[in-house]
Image 1 (cartoon, one colour):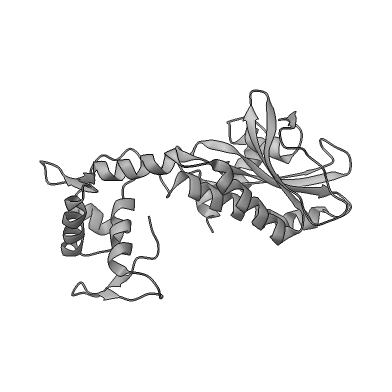
Image 2: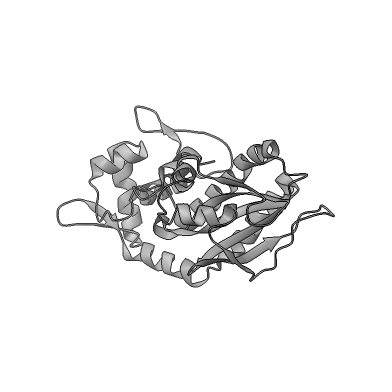
Length: 257
C-alpha cells in the first residue's frame, strides 16, 4: 500500500503533503493497491480503513474507477479490481524485461560502494551470473556474465539456498539477518556480501551482491556495505513484486527502504 497518501481532515478534505502530486490520482492508486494477493473483494469499510480515507471519499473514488472498469462492485456491495486493472498488468508484463530493472540497480550499487555488483539466479544445482556492472577500481574480482558457479560456496549462492528453504546453519542466520558475508569461501582473497531479490508473488528470483579483493573488502567494510546491498535488493524486490503482502518475507519488511 502507498505510504504517501494525503491525510484527510475530519470533513473529508485533503491535507497537502509534499509537492508535485495530484491528490485524486494518489488516492485512486492507493485504493487499487489496498488489495493484497489472493483477496477477491473488500468492503467499503475495509478499504476506508486500509487507505486512511473517509468512506464517502472511498465510495466516490471507487465509483469513478468503476466507470473505466478499474473497479467493480459485487452483488453483495463489496468492491474488487476490475478487468481494466488486469489489462494494465498484462501490458506491463508483456513489455517487461527484468534486466531493464536489474542493471540500473547494479549501477546504483556500484556508485554507492565503488565495488563491482552482480546478479545471480539459480539454475538447478548451480547459480548463474545474469547481470554484472564492473566497479571503477583497477584491482577487482572478475566474473563473466553467464558464468556458472556453485550454490554452496560464496555469499550469493548461500543467499539463494537460504531463501529456497535450505535447513540448518548458516541458512537460518541468513534468513534472520537478510544477507550473507563471504570471505575467501569460493575463491581465495575474494570477499562478497549478498542479499535476496524477490519477484511477483514474493517468490525468490535471485541474489544481488558486491564483490572484490579481501584486502579492500574487510569484514568491517562488508558489514558497512551490507545495508546498501540489502536496501538495493529490497528496492528491486518491491519494483518486481509490488507492495507488501502476507507472502513478503519478514526480513524484507523490516529493511524496506
